[in-house]
Image (tube, rainbow, N blue to C red; front, side, top):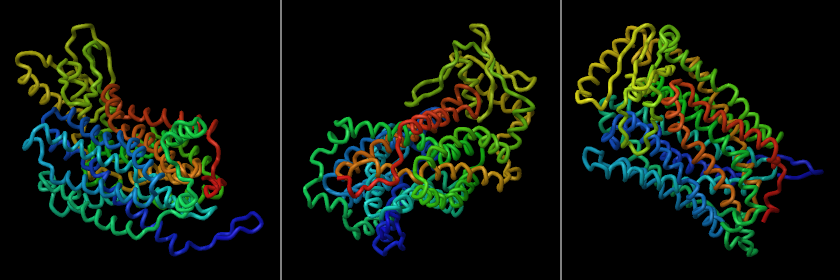
Length: 552
């Protein structure tokens, strides 16, 4: 790298730079692999660890346990960010990967609810919390470490390799799941085979630790440490001084919140939508997502490199706006190409729930203890579990809810009645027969799935992820001084991705159950993306020309 007449002249990446990127990225891939297994295997975790509650509550509970790992990520950012700014980048993310690997492996050996009762979900959530804490310290360390090894004018491209790790980690988890599932068959996989990907993480842990032990500390951090300029109190300096705190707030509401919902919509909500709403079999859904990730991943590097030339901000803001404007047509297209029978039945025989609004609950049950016993709740619960669209029509107070499928009416029942169990069997059988007669498929027909077009739609959603996520590591690094960089950039990143992004699947699922429209959950990412776009356009400044080496 040389600077001539104020212009940056690029030279090939050095061997040491390649080693830094490879080691940091590979370790991060393994850590994301560990973290994503809980989301990819949510259905099996639900049956094993949360089998003591009703199926709808169990699935929401599983999604929330997945989100629990995201919820504590900001606390991990604080704990390990402080350590990274005081002790160093290298040793901090050595600690995080050990915590992540061990907690993931233990999930593979954890007995289910049938064996140890309530201790099973409690321990599982404890492992998720440890994973979240570890991941909260991982990303900031890896991104900061690579950025501080990057030459000027190439920071977006170099850090974009770190941005690929989340997608590659998800891809690796899906690849392992599909491989194990295909090898041993669905029955064995459902009973115990789903545990193998968790146990296998112990091997990844060994490789990751060995690789990271070969690294040297960041030269930028070594310089300020030698000069005695490291922060003695990074937390109070980062968040107790308004000049730094306002940048942290802007990084959250003007960048990472919107980036997070676009990311999790494109990579996680799509999987839930395919399997839970469109009823695509798990293997096919995982393969489709994996192919889309494989096609889309190089675009992280493309947009990271592009941000070195035209700036980080315009790329990220464009991605937020485009995603918000096109989510509805893209998800409707996904329905059209993966389950056309469901689309046709919805148009031909629309479903209406006729019920007393006073009996209708918001079916969001995070602890799995509530029982939905009113006739309205029974109707909506049955339809939301089946992933079906329905409209709501108010009925007089005290009316027993009805489900109208086309011209056929199905009566529900009061779940508090003495013969509720017998009525439930009759109701479920009648509803199933009525839905089948109206053309509603219980599962997506593999023969009717348009694989090429489904993958095109999924790839577009992944490319949206690369637009907003590819340049963001470089931008966050450039916003903060070296002495508090690890702490300052980690917190807004993990609040955005851990809270706004991590709670997206559970929140969207509950919104759909309440509203009756399978697409209504998309309003959550759309609104947050648009708010972030407006704030980012008005208040966030471009950073690509920042000299991070001069920022002590």
